[in-house]
Image (tube, rainbow, N blue to C red; front, side):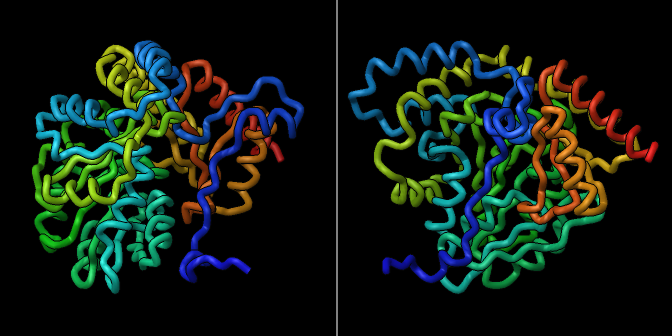
Length: 369
């Protein structure tokens, strides 16, 4: 019998959201919308599509391992290319960071209710994850995180804003945390939803790249606002003496050339990104107010989704099922450690109106019973 290394027995694979096709086949529905994976409802930039299509003519040649994209990103962020590494999505970079920096006998710290890939990545290298309690308003407790990281901690992971709550650490909170943590602790700040949050909260949402802390590694992705989720392209920005170790553990020629070409074109299409964040701002404000008016508890999200807390596992399961049978795919959050909650991604204006009307109908039926 072929057996894995022992610590892999504790690893639970990431469970992606349901696809439109699977729901159509299971329920016999024709009109199904997926609002479960925080994807860009406007699709990718057409410039990115053209760049990807053009690059396919060179698919027989090994690409440059993301070097041209690194140089373009360096200009975008006003840093040296040696401070940037690109990878197959920021998710893959989280796993690479754990392989590279999580010391034997040390632990990695984050919060309960955070992005589940952190725990999978830590378990995947046989490490120990310490999750501090989340505050009552679904926000991270920086004092608890600092306390947990005070001894034998290699890495602190902060998704900002957090998935699946959509809440965030402010500039003052993050500054305090960075000033408090030991300098030998690597602070990984996952800003996958940066474009949305910086538009919605320009006054107090931090851009951690601009901080310039030597022990901070910032993650960004092209999967969300840039609409390239299927191409799996993300990057990290940090001090050169940190990034160099990720260069040593990086696979040759990753990420692929098609993704890199599309990412460069997407980065240049500022109109598409602006339209995306503006569409999200409308949908998020409307949907958050609507669910609260219906009596649901919703987190104060600055990402591209709303999290509803139904206050019971049974109610969350029922709400997900009711929406699914109306052709709306949402994300139950049992796997994220929030079993009473449901996450609904923002969509087009038409998607938002459909979700609102369906929730109203469900709420009315619930009151009438």
